[in-house]
Each structure stands twice: as structure tokens, then as C-alpha cells.
Image 1 (cartoon, rainbow, N blue to C red):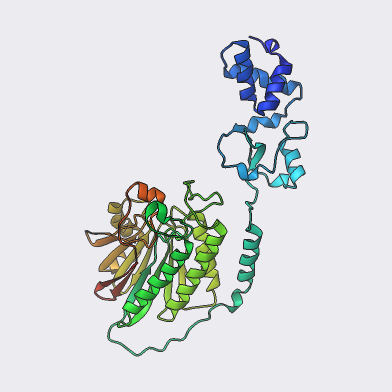
Image 2 (cartoon, one colour):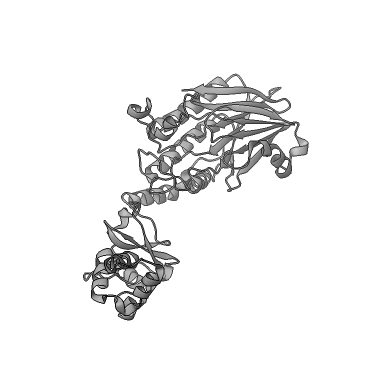
Length: 410
């Protein structure tokens, strides 16, 4: 079969209807009673290009039948005559700097027409400008943030490290009692963090605390993208937009850290996690900037998946728990932690699975934390529920290791 056997006028009519060479070619082959193949598509494509019907930029064409791009359908790539704009014309028409475009793809959709998915464009949406202005305004006022505190404590024979670990909070998560039997949303999440931290402080009033290890990250946010997905793209049930959840997480971290600084100096550790790998790191960095004038709080906010902290003869590791196998963590600690040989008591606190487990390996105790978050539809459907909801803390003696676990149950 040759290109001349195509009825070009009909093929063009199909193309303008479908906005896709493949679909146009399939319809034309069906009408001619022949089997569709890529060679027919390529022939038709070359012929249409030779007639200047379409632009060569359509080599970057893709097709989707999902609704995930429907929010940008307003930036249509269609001209008034139904033809598709080339990428440079598209950028010029919508005021997008063409020189900043690194990669792009033409997306066609049966309902919303066609548009370009440009990787380098800034993601904006309803409320984004408000969020951005508010964030810049708050950062500009950082000079008034907490200053250093001079502490005066009586000399005690024994003092302790308090580990505070509010993990897997999942601000943005929505659980509806009609579906899962309980309510959970961002407001409840924030309240539980504050209540849990205050409960741990109250339960440890009888001890002299000279240092606090605050373990942050670990899915503090439920989503990482404006499309309400985790970092890897898993869709989530949410109750607020991504930027609102981010601001709520920022405020609750600042509030509880100020409260903990009333008790003792704080070391802040960020554990990167699978729900909010990107936003979680930005959040930790903003918290570090907020407290930049306060020498009573130190930070470990890089993106390493395992963090280590030394207190007396204690070596304490923390990680989210979605990466290395639990059984490999002790050996990884031995290779990665510089104080391994100097510490008699070794612990690794993990997260991610939302329930308690604790196991002694040769010289290392590995313990997973409970979550304070509610059960959403996916977890309820798969039977991942009924574990106690809690925020946990630990007391460590300089010489004797972990001496107490403090649990605030909801």
C-alpha cells in the first residue's frame, strides 16, 4: 500500500477530529478495510507534514485518556482553525519563556483538546500566590525569631535525654467516619501533635532533662504534589490543599519546638519519607531558618535516609523505615556512625508501618513507632487498622541507655 492510496482530505478530516495522527490513521485504515500498522501511521504522518498540515514538533506527541491533566486544559494548544501550535508559538502565546523550557510533551485528550506538558513551568493553582506571599512575608521577619536562652539549672546527680518522636502524622489526610468509622483531618492531626508533645513533657516532669532529641519528618505531610499524590504518585484522600497543609505543618513544628525549648536545648533531626520527600525537606529547611538566631537548637536536615545522634554512651539512629531492611540497619549503623565503638547502648527508631515492634539484634535495639494518624479508606479496606494511635517519647540515661518509654495514647 502506498501513501497515494490514502484519501488525504478524509485523513485530514479525521486528524482534525481526533487531534492525533495514530487515531486518524486507525480510522482511515478501518474504512479502507486494511490492518493498521506503524508503517501506515508513519507514511500518513510524513505526508501530512509535507503538506504543512502539522508541525514537526509533533514528534513529541503523546496520548492520554486520564483526567490528571484536566486542570491545565485552559492553556489549549489548538489554534482557531483547529491546528496545533508548535511549541515556540505556544510559549509565545501564553507568555512562557521558551528559553527556560527543558523538556515538553504534547498531550491530547478527547475531552479537553490538546496542550503542552512543560516540565520547567512553575506549578501554580488556586491560592498559590497567596501561599507564596505569606511564606515570603514570614521568612522576611526571621530577624525577630527566638534568640538564645541562658539556662540556670541546679546541679543534679543524674540528667537525661528526652527523645520526642511525633511520626506519621499525615497532615492533609482525610478519614471519614461514614467510610472508616472515625474522623481524621488536618486540624485533628495538628491538635494531636500538640497534645502528644505536651503529654510527654507532663509525664517526664519528675526527671531532669538536659537535652531533647526531636525526630521530625516521617510523613508529617500526607501528599507531596498539587495533584494530591505522594512523592511517587499514589493518590491520597485529602481535606486541604498542599500549600495549606504545608503552612499548618510549619506552624505546629514551630509551636512545639518553642515549647520544648522551655524544657531543654533541642537537637532537630529530619528523616526523609515516602509521602512527602520534597515538601518535607523544604519544611525542615524553613524550620532551621526560622530558628537561625537561637543557639539552643541544632539541626540535622540533610537528605540522608539514616541519621545518628550521640548522648553519653548512647548511639541513637533514626530512619523512616521504607528503605533498608530492618535486619540490615544494625550493620549499616556500624559502618555509618562514627561513635559506634564509643557507645555501649545502641538504638534505632523507625517509622512508616504505624505500629509497634521492637527487636534486639546483636548490640542494637530496633524499634518502630506508633502513629497518631487516623485510618483512611485504603488502610481500612486492606485491614491495616486497630493499632493504638499514639505519640511516643523515650528517656535515655547517659550511662545506662534507654530507661523509660513515654506513650501518649489517643
